[in-house]
Image (tube, rainbow, N blue to C red):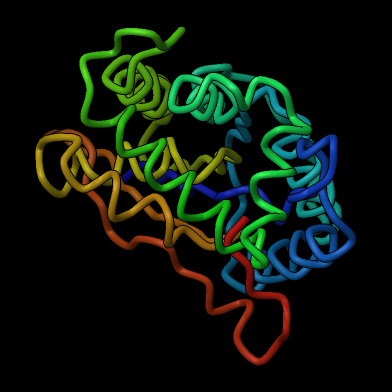
Amino acid sequence: MPTIYLIRHAQASFGRSDYDRLSPQGEQQSAVLGRALTERGIKPTLVIRGAMRRHAQTAEFALRAAGLDATSEVDEGLNEFDHDQVIVAYKPAYKRRPVLLADLARTGDPQRAFQQMFTAATQRWAEGDGTGYPESFQAFCQRSEDAVRRTADRLGKGESAIVFTSGGPIAAVTSRLLAGSDDLWLALNPVTVNTAITKLTSGRGGLTLVSYNEHGHLDGTDLLSYR
């Protein structure tokens, strides 16, 4: 039976001007992930990734650590939603980054304040009708599912694919497989661990979720993170 391993990218540079690159911790996470893939005996037929730098870097470090001589193909359907657009739609003044940073600093706990604001912004996006957003929540979930199904369609019996993507697309696909809708996305998205593995199988009945958010390879380390 064909198998797909959806992998969330390693820790990116949260709080920096350029979020879309791995932090030093993210590089370590990717290497640990790669060794875990080897220990599990995963030898993919396909390696697919989103078009973001953090996807490419996670794939690069993980495949190198796994000793896999594989070239990753890009599918932009696996890209994360544009969090900047979601935030600006929630509060247009935050189009100016200094305004956002100043508001967060005034709280005395910028990281906590950002998380509260971001949760409210994504909830507005997920529960709205898409007005005011370049990409609606429903369109995002659909293109995430479509990308995973494109990968499944390319696999033959006994073949597997490793897919490097982001927490949002993984949560979107997982919600649809578990609930038949996008209703679980808001609960699943925030808890997706960096480099966690979500396993799907593809059979006559379509895609089946086998496991979600596996991150045992990070147990016993200080590498666990969610951004």
